[in-house]
Image (cartoon, rainbow, N blue to C red; front, side, top):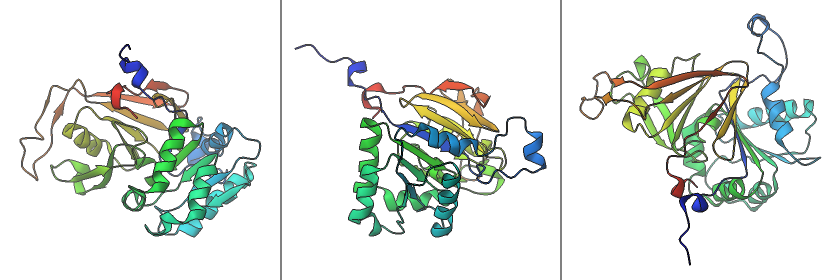
Length: 291
């Protein structure tokens, strides 16, 4: 019997991920900033989510766990999806780890065509969903079925392996300022940050990448996101920019030598600014254990 190649051992997920930088347009109402931005299209990101769903009457599951006002957050998406012609919606109202075990919620996740993770606090999302049967079902379906899993703000930040959940003052310039943990791991060896330009988060992402340059940094601006297919092929959607930060070729950092409170340095990191319609390939860092 011949040995399998690395390519044969790699599982290429059939599911689609949509990571959104937050504040995606939900009402279509125009203001001065939207009118000035020639890339702005009303409700474009959530419409793309609906377009990626394959069934005629797709079931959408909304998980508002990250939100401090889950009922209101879920209702916002129920309303906008209705405007877009998607009315078969169920709310998976998980507020603690006991809720995650409810059979009715597990059944929704087993049958949903699309799943929407709302914004809020990404640490709340991982602390409640991490290690549960519900999350395992999501991951198994993502690998084996053409399910669409979207997340906005906290929901997007939690999709990656290296999840930033807190940054102190000075936007993460000093060692010890940036706190990270393991996310939900739908995207391996990737760190996602949101509200990226509006909140000046490039420095804290660089800080995160300095700790392990093998992690690709993707910064998503508001009303902007990426659609990822086959686990690697990414397309930019929405009205703004994303920032792709690649430190694999970096030549020097002081993060392993600096004391807490000292500025973190990093040389020769590659940075790309990408807009709607641009595509890029997420590196296949370790094909044997990608999924």
